[in-house]
Length: 291
Image (cartoon, rainbow, N blue to C red; front, side, top):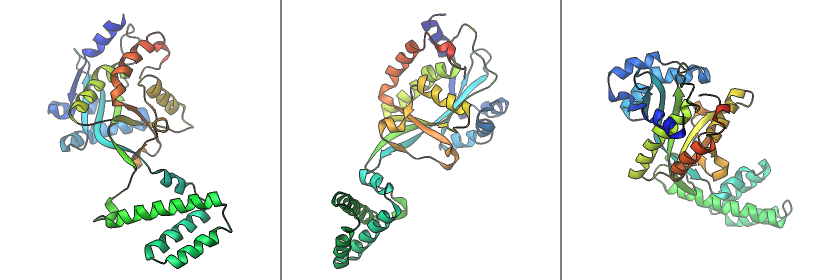
């Protein structure tokens, strides 16, 4: 089967919102998925319907044409990516003694105790080189500015200052039924084909209506689990995600994703990566594990 016929095969699958039909709720109970200790299966059966109804997360199901078996479900929601201030990163890397020194100087400035502030700056010369002390004082000024901005807010508990923010879409769940297998003549994994032909068009349609720069997800990441490492490689090699560090941005990680690794890609590159990935994997997709 050639590439265009393969794409046509995946195009025929039916993608619909979970709550678009009342009958869909009962059908979730037949879904089977053992990945990540059945957590995804449990979510799909017990929470997905309510999340979709409430609008907290939009959940989609993808059915095989003909049998109408639910082959895969995924969910997406709006989220945020951001970059931190360089001085914030510098502050995190300070030793315990240095951070105590910086915090003391910030407190003195906030209290207006300038005489004590300058005495302690002078005293710092005995412990730090001129370059190191200059960096510490830059951090002091930055943290004083940030604290003043937070204190000026109506409720500082609800404010987090960042250097710059970027609109994003999170793929919160991405899971196929363990029992489904593509025909032998389809050499591409089902997750690969449906991501390219069914999920990407939805992401692109959303981004036409609202500003969205990044698409991201969390992949299970436990160094002692070979399956987790294979999954991360799969997301990178087949779905064209890459490490957050490569882009220099930060995303918020919920507690339930504690053992997961954040991966992302630019939405503006989805069309290119879709065409590129089909071609790039046309010669070696048989080496990928079917997912």
